[in-house]
Image 1 (cartoon, rainbow, N blue to C red):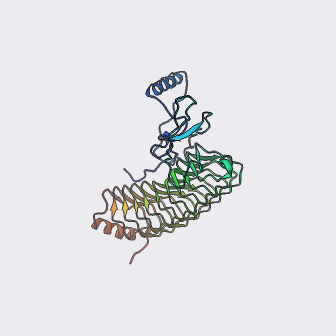
Image 2 (cartoon, one colour):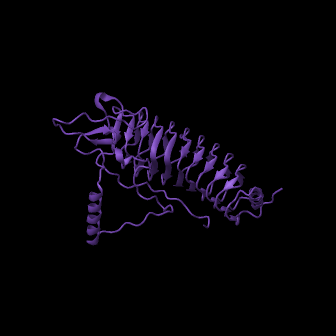
Image 3 (cartoon, rainbow, N blue to C red):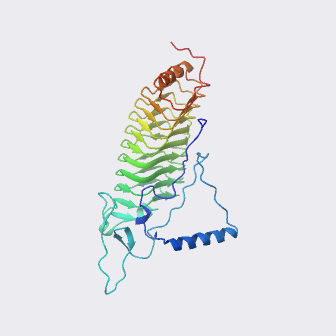
Length: 364
């Protein structure tokens, strides 16, 4: 490991929630059928199909395009809730008994206020009697919408991914009551997007924000406290990132290539189980993480040309390499003193690289 490893910004192929596909209409494959499908696919490829490249473990220059999720929920067969989730309704017959009724999603989701399957247009989901949809048992994917404003004022829970991708007209979106996204929350390549609001969001499997060229602030995620990863990269208008409630990141914390970012606030951030990376943010003056204690893998602060101060006083564990390099305004002596304290506490379990910082600046 050389300290320049990066993370993927791609969308997962399916929901990250265990058992999610078992509740989706149309997903019931026997082993025999699966073998036949695989054999058929191989025969087709021998006739000239292109094999996809393996997943890229580094972030590309632009994010990997989200895959098109299955159109679950569009089947003509009537579906009902059962012990296994959504299954085809039993056909009328003399010996057919009542279908079991077990609902698996958390409160406030019920059979009456939940949409099962993928949603690509918020205007198309409704329930009888006009009651609002509170939950989506599937993915919410909005791509190339013609709307300038997108609002889902009643939505509380999504069991799959929330994807807003290549919406070039969209100015802003708001999910005012959304608290939980069990899959990934992915906002990418929305050319005109300037701001968004999710003030009640508490948890998501991963929060990925990439290539939204007019996005100015990330300041309305005031309840987000736990996630599998934070990835914010490739923004040319973004100036402020505020994550006031963020405490635990179970994967990577990755802030990369945001060309005019000047304010990054995460005062309660204490732990990332994977990597910490703050790289190529040329206008960021201070790296302040006063509560950060634990980094499970490598720690990297690199190529932030206006960075003059490190404020990470409580760091006591770095599971891999520690790299603070190529920050041309950051006093080398300040870095050296900080690293010496870490080494005295045996806090770093890998190698240390603190080269190419500012050696001209004198320290007291």
